[in-house]
Image (cartoon, rainbow, N blue to C red; front, side, top):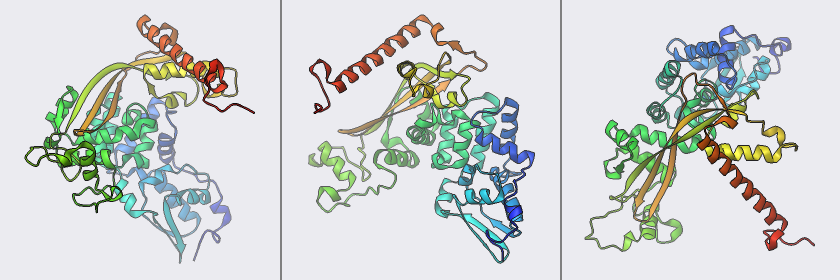
Length: 418
């Protein structure tokens, strides 16, 4: 039998020597935008051809085989998508420790057996390989994913936000997967899933700023709406409650809050067991604005900054100016140049019952291929004027907050000091 304490230490602690293909595959996932265009194209080709070799086989699978060789054991492994997070490839021993973050590994009787640590979860979040191929193919051709393509990816990968392969690709190969930025991904993923569940006519209605009656949505779309409104694990059936507010079904609670439970039974309005009014609808409004992306020599800064609205750009400029010369200044590099694109905001208003609605917004940013960045000081006069106005407003708010915290002007939000 062999285990982590018996194999030849020199083999287990010697540097892992990856093939050129594996190195390229690893860099493509973990370079966070630091690849040349030629390298990016090569990595996309690797991950697109999943029929020949699964994405997990490139550097994760290759290193797992070499690790088993270092321990002088045979290998049987089922590799989960979460293994894409592995970053430590220095030695077989360190790689194995990193691999155990997503898998259970047992070594006994000359065999290394590796299986997902959470099998059911791994099955649920496993990325649909065909959808990955379609995304990479479109990215290679056009350099950007539109809303329809992103929605199709989200619909076929409901838990894509938790998938190591999809999130890793969004950071380096296909930054437009999550639209505005990765930080906004959680809010937009469900909306993209919902949009993907709409039929072609409904999608056109939505993009045209129309209204979608809930009664006309398919079961898949209604399932996403229910998840957005009440949570993924809520079981919404009539008659769940036993009388107290704590045990009311959410449908009963919605009826109580909206007054529907007191309506005459002769009225045509009914409330479904899932808490939706038969007269409920989704109103979609479309807005257009500018989008800004940083052009900076600071490593990784453009990825952190993401794609921002005029308000967000104004806030950043204000923050950078206010901390300049302080120990926090390094966190806000100078932002002298930006790429300017357009942003379409699709605003969904979910009117579930007469007294219950919520709003969620999906952003779609578009930048012209090959466009050059411009100096912030050379933005068009109307844009520059709005930007400066908003920056001054943020500055004023900061001054007022400072006054309040110091108790100046007779106002204070803090107790007096002793």
